[in-house]
Length: 208
Length: 208
DNA sequence: CTTTGTGAATTCGTTCACAGCA
DNA sequence: TGCTGTGAACGAATTCACAAAG
Image: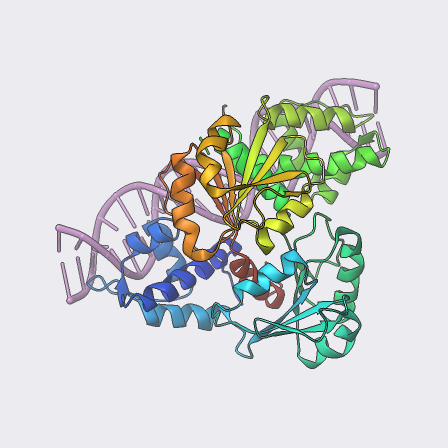
C-alpha cells in the first residue's frame, strides 16, 4: 500500500456505508456535495479522497453508487475476507453481536468467546460462543487477526496478551484500560466514558 | 473560550484520566516524556498542549499530578457539573451504566430512560431508570444537556429529535444511523461496526 | 449552467531545537 | 545534567479556484 492517509481511509469507510444505504434506497448516482453532506464532510474532501484511490466520476452523473461502493471495497477489504473474534459476551459484547445482522461486506465471520459456561455453546445472532480456552485452537484455524476486547477491566491486559500470542494483529478495546502492546499491533481505544467527556465538553463549548 | 484545538481538548481528557490513575498509585509528579508515553503521544505534544491551557511545570519536578489533574478539570469542566441522560437500557445502555462506578469528576449525575416497564423504576449502578415520556419533565429539571442514544436503530432519529426539543446540546450516538441535527448540536458518532472496519483495515495494513 | 479532477494556496497540527532553569 | 517552555521549521490535511467536460 502506498500513500493514503489514515484520515482518508476512515472517511472511505463512512462513504462506503452511506453508498450501501443509498443502494437500498434505489439511488443510482450521487454528486460530491451530497455525499460530503451525508458523510459529515465537504464536496472538495470527497473528490480529493476518491482521487487518492483513483476512482473517477463524470461531471454529468457524478458517481455511480454501486460501482463506487465496490471500488472502495476493493481498495479497503481483504480479498480473503476477515473474521473477527469478540472476547466477552456481557452487555457490551452482546450489543456488538446485535449489530451483526447488518451485512458488512468485509467482516465475513464473527466468533464470540466467554468463560461463562452458561453462554458457551450457545449461538447469538448466528455467532457461536466458545470458551476462552478454545481461542488457542480456533483463532489460528479461522485465521482471525482482529478482536474486540469486551471483558471486565481486570482481565483486559491479560486478554490482550493472550490474543497477541495467538496471532491477533488488530484490537478494538472497549475497556477503560490503556493496553500495552508491541508496536506492530494496531489498537483502537473506545473508552465509553472518555467519549462521554468529549461530548460533554463540546456540547458546552459549541465553537469547535 | 479562545483558540484551543479540538485535538488538544481530546488529549487533555486523556491526560486527566491518566493523572487520576497515577494519583491512586501514589505517584506525585510526572515528566512530559512519561505522560506522553502513557497517553500514546509525545513529550513535545504534551508540553505544547499544557502550554495552551497555561499550565506550568518545573524542570526539576516536571508536573504535579494532582495539581495538573485539577487544572485540566478547571479548564474542561462545567463548574455547575454535567448531568447525562442515557436513552435505552438494552445491552448497550446497560454496559455504559456498568462503567459509571468509575468516578468521573465532571459527570455528576447519570439518568437512564427506557420504554420497557419492567426496567422503569428500577435502579442500575445508582442510576434511576425513568420512562421515556418523562424526559420532558426531567431533562429541563435536572439541566441535562448531554445524552447517549442507545436505542434500536429505528427509533434513533425520533429519539434524537425529541432530545433536541428538550434542550439537549450534545449527543453520543451508538446507533448505525447518521443523525440529522441542526448545526448548533454536537454529535459524536460511535458506530461500532464502523470501528470494527477501521481496525480490520489497519490490522492488515500496518503502515499508518 | 453544474459538475469533476487537480495544482496551488492555505490552514492546521506536530516536531525540532535550543535558551533558561533547578 | 535532563527538564520545561516556546519560536521557528516542518509536514499533513483541507480548501480554493479554475480548466475541462457533458
